[in-house]
Length: 333
Image (cartoon, rainbow, N blue to C red; front, side, top):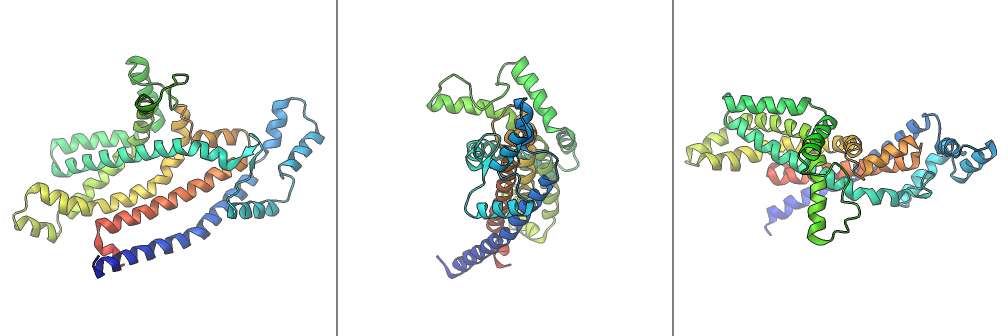
């Protein structure tokens, strides 16, 4: 490995370490703010449990609050929660009477699968559309694809999901209406993989529609800007073909703002998971968050918000690595 490559990798490692240290106070601030905001919401898990039982007494509700520590002052509970996080303990769920970490881990894989697939589809399809639009800028193909992107941008994801269910599930019968697998089928191996993929198609496409439009328009604008740079004209004057110029020089540099926006929108993907997972009955963190809100199970909700902030920070660190690979000059900053 050359000295310059080692120096570049050392710079990248230094940037990642600095970002990691900056993430610590950010996460603490997010947790504290979420805790305080949820404290301002009226009601708690004891109220919901009492309402469902139908025969709760004041003494019973007081006992429930003592059991789950809901009767303690807010600052003391906040301190306990922060010290618990430092020990990788997210507390207990009053609703499920189970560790919050276990409840989240049971759903985390499904959410990451859905969000990762949706983001991958959005980036690939958006970049491809953006390349086609920039290559035919000003022509009817560009105008047609721009209209398609505008429609995807202005259409709510839940409406796309509902229409996809009506068309592909109800009318055509090609894909299942919801869930992550066929209940009671007992499938294993390749059959189980195909069954899971069929359940994943509709929610992933419905989630990615809005972001396909964003990445397509951004790629088009970025490629048109990069194509006017001096080094692109130099590459063309050296006799490189249109394909080599487009993919080796224009697209590679145009992807830098696309990756930045992709990292920024990862949090929006997680936030939109609640709607999509509810529409498609997908067993992920979004549905768990909604159930926690309805049950006033704020311990689980805080755990989901904490984990979501960590995922967004990790996603942005990965974007930094990708940008350093796309543009070597970033390593020297």
